[in-house]
Image (cartoon, rainbow over all chains, first blue to last red; front, side, top):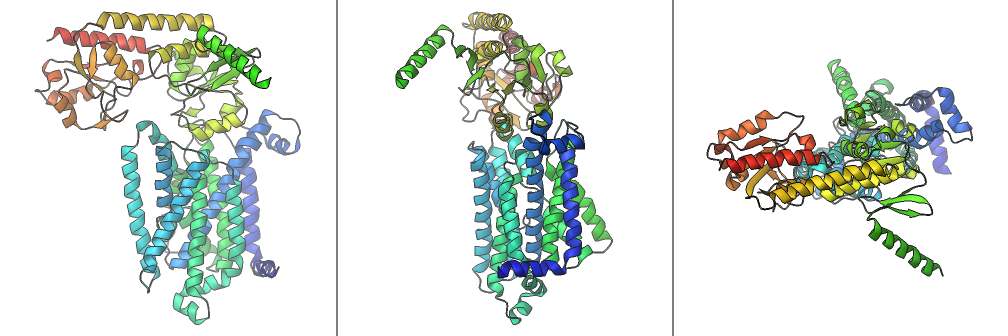
Length: 333
Length: 300
């Protein structure tokens, strides 16, 4: 109960931008529901939720569009929050789950799973285990030295990511040609293969609830470990906890949609420019804005050259790269 | 009692299998066994067929069910009528909305080509899935018959299948005693790829009295170096390719005048769509390949 009160108290102070983003999220979800390669009127979409009869429109909306849109939103939210956490943890604007090798580990495990011919739950399970193994590897190797610095963590992550990259290339070179398309699409990130969206939602909501009360501590941590320690924060425990949370977020995101790049890097930076660097706002805002971005990107992926379908990772990168460069050029990063 | 009736049903099914190797009926339904050994049943003949690979489209048309095909995927270019059918994306990534909105009552899926997640979703939505994946000549013939059974076009399908079997066995008879020709079939040029002896293309080569030089390769589709091909020193090189032209693939081998195939000018092109899609058109491809290898025998 105390935790809920703290959550409400911290949310209370920063309401306005979050309410705006929440509204934007709802509009985005509704817009995505009306878009598809089969054109349905808003009224038909509305009827799918209210009408009793099982029409074709109902099937399209409830069994194809809705699960995919929900998966896209949750995945985007997971990735953006994971990126925001990593950037605070490492006090480095470059940090994001993909740079740190977490998604690399997930990808290697998933490709091996595709190679031996499993799919569905087992493929997702393999990706999840791969992400966790990579996390343990990065964190374990960094902790070997007592004076673990954030730079050391970043370097270890980058090197391990390079190692995963080599393994991915090796698997692609040795894989039978008929398995290559599936593997490539998986590496690019694709919501066409997404299963049930609920695990991603449960994790996203749970992690956000855990994080809200930690906002103030994270703000201090962002200014430096020494400063945080002098203010009485158990830095080691907080850092470890944040890293584990970020890894779980990434693992679930990768498990849902494969390797979707750029959301974790671009969304937190964009939000910081507009909303300032208060983690109590940035973290929930990242969840909402990341969700909106990936939902819109996936809507484009489904419709822009229909019936041909694009992997959503291509769209996020194509949108993300010029946006990021423009911001860099204008000197706002 | 229940076990007994099951046993009885089993005997019936077994009897049915002996009578006709694939088609049987359970409770008045049309049933066949697909290439994943699953039992596929329809309560009435298929009226709306979705073919999720170019090969499946060809098989459906060959089986006399062309008029019932309502959905195809990219590169479904044969027969020409298939190009007019609504496309539902590429075989590796289906436009699920468009596919579902066409309301197919039979989906011809490609087990190793279509994403298993998307096919599983279609199955969950209650669609009837038939996996098409013929591995040899008999598989091609019986695929035509089985699709014909589901689409109630057995008269056409049986004729096409019989002609195919007849054509293949004629070729087999003619080239049974022919002198063997060591042959390299080039599936792709960069990376250089062939296929091992278990692949049906290798069986086409053997049918014509050829010997696949990479028959013993451990992988179904081995990736090779030029050195490996030079070492095998094949007497004939046959290339497939993308589209119906690939002159430069064969040009590359002219750089090696010591290679037996180059020396005897046995560099042959066979249109890949006639060989690389497991459909009745393989017979046309096999006839061309057999002629080419016979030409090579004459050049000894």
